[in-house]
Image 1 (tube, rainbow, N blue to C red):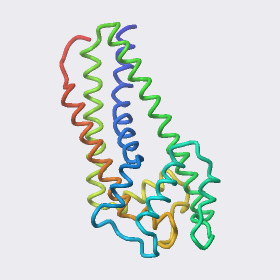
Image 2: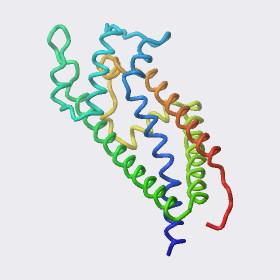
Image 3: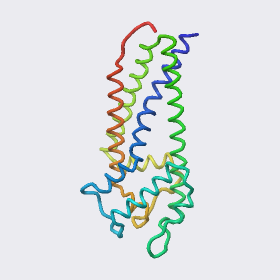
Image 4: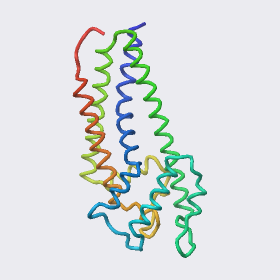
Length: 222
């Protein structure tokens, strides 16, 4: 019975590691620090339709806060240009609502992975299962490395294809397609998403390598 529990926990912990590392990387990207650095970095494309960097930071951060807090969609509906026109049209608001739903689902999976890891840690502590525990985490680190390495290669080969397929998986139809003049594209141009994928890939890949190497496999009978 104990060996069966070890095998189950080992498997669950291994697949939890990529979730933990990748979602922690996403949370870094959802911080105001990243947005401030991104909008102010040299070479970031200006908005051809007139947003200043400060306006991008203002509206971009309000949009970010909506996605990660309990802020109601009505708060974004109230955002206005100087002429009184709404910042976001209905189609953009619907997409942001869809993004928030997807993000909530990702965070739910993250907390499941946290619980699995806590249970595995407690089991390792009380059942003297540390070697098997470390092996499970190490395998998870190398699994993370393999998955993110693949994503990075795909982003280098064709970022547009990767970006398109990502949206086709998580969003219905063409609900994520917008005009260049739409606010979402003006605030978050393709270069923004290229940098997002690059930083996400590097941080997650580095985390996977670190976990895989530090907790490298030590064979025993557990």
